[in-house]
Length: 201
Image (cartoon, rainbow, N blue to C red; front, side):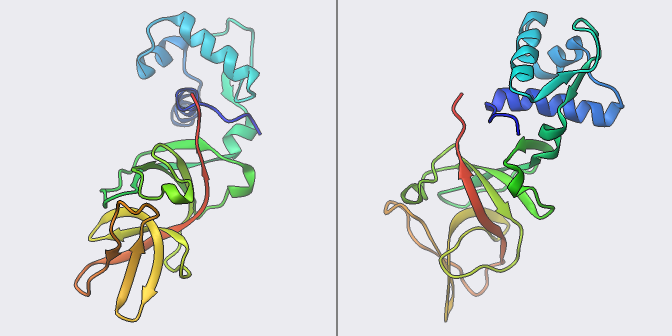
């Protein structure tokens, strides 16, 4: 698998991949510049060289070919959908989008997806603001597992504890209160957290 990429480099790879899938051809440097708001062709060339070194992109023609870029098979095969933000704090509306992000091949599964963490309520579990989590989509969880939960259509990241009188969602930061799901609340599980990682620019 290609090395872990910074968010900016991953965004570059994602654009090349998604453009190629949609248009059945690779984007030109000019199309990349406009789409990603890059100021010069030289900067695009720098990204391409760096991503070639990382094994995330490859050229299918001469170095100066206008449409020679393609996403490496390993990179393309080792991505999951990045569906948006998840609150590690108070509930936050989940933001869905069409991006993808590279993950270890062992986590590739049709039911898995990635979210970016916003907030610090899970810091005692070493889940920090800006981290990424891989989630297995499922409607049930065991007591004590870290879950993505939806309360009245708002999403949060907490530890799950079913109780006789309902469900409690526990933070891992004493500055935050336990969330107690009330009988009238709409509640469902969006999945169980499988892995956490952070990217250093």
